[in-house]
Length: 97
Image (tube, rainbow, N blue to C red; front, top):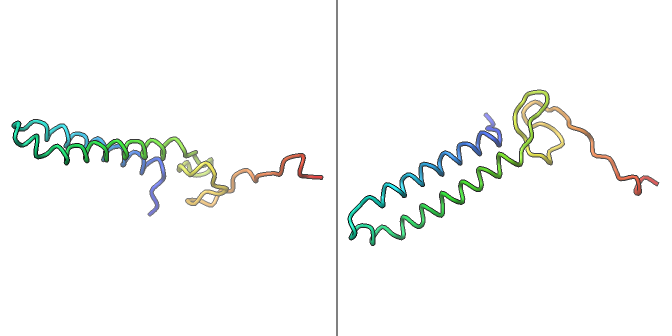
């Protein structure tokens, strides 16, 4: 089973929200534990931000296939799910001569 780019992007964004929630939950401790958990909290925060950016990239950089509706990368020439062939790229007018 192949997961489309948009679905994986949404899963990554969901995982980012969970990590960010865990980071917020860890700040609800006493002052002593906060100082000990500061590196972990910073790491979770940065990982959640990177995952959020990656998920948004996967969603924005995909286009729907006209035949099956699955999301594929914008640069793909054919759909990896159903085999639909997108518009064949043509050479510019200057190179045709």
